[in-house]
Image (cartoon, rainbow, N blue to C red; front, top):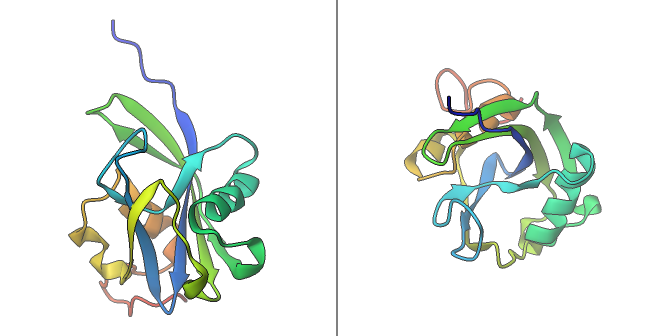
Length: 150
């Protein structure tokens, strides 16, 4: 009988500025999901809140003084049947005070600021839309809302 994959805990942080979210194209140098768009993410090696700030600092160069926590979502289970992986994603949304300070590291090859309603137009890592829904508030996908944070 095949064994269930053991869940792996990760943080995924979405960064917001002017009602748009930052998505990052995963480089060929990362271990998984190369060429897919995602948020700032990483394996939890400490508590999730500390890990979120660590990943933001490492992947964007932003310090805790450059961002404000908007919302922390309830952890979500995301299954990737193709890779036989089960992720427990701890979702976060942070507001970026000055997006010109962002400097992406080797984990990403490109960045874009997009409307939350447009996220579905991109080839993303598994569960990114669910992460957005968990932290954005009402109607991130343009159904009955204005796409802005409440």
